[in-house]
Length: 141
Image 1 (cartoon, helix red, strand yellow):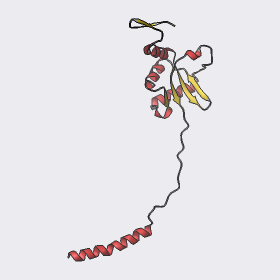
Image 2 (cartoon, rainbow, N blue to C red; image 1 turned 30 degrees about the vertical axis):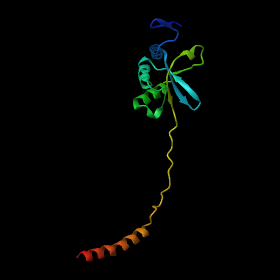
Image 3 (spheres, rainbow, N blue to C red; image 1 turned 45 degrees about the vertical axis):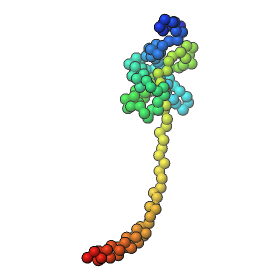
């Protein structure tokens, strides 16, 4: 590994810029599946686009991605652009980000509930208030 100059001293670790360059040249995207993560290899322009998407987060749920980003991930998935990281030296490939593919949650349908106040109680309260209103009108006349 080459040493990178940091001020007046030699730094043994690459800088953030060097990591971005590695992601741009060799980066892969991890996609969560029920059987474990799968890694897809985007082309150069797609890597740049996905680096911008994952600039602040390493992992994002698929639901928060924009429609164009979802289409890109789906296209990489359907084109079988998979990369095996079990090959010797493949673990050195930088991961741009991880897409969490969760199964959509089904909303539970609840049965219709009856209102807390019954109609008969409403009618009784309305009929009890009508004579009081009539007596107020008579008193004001």
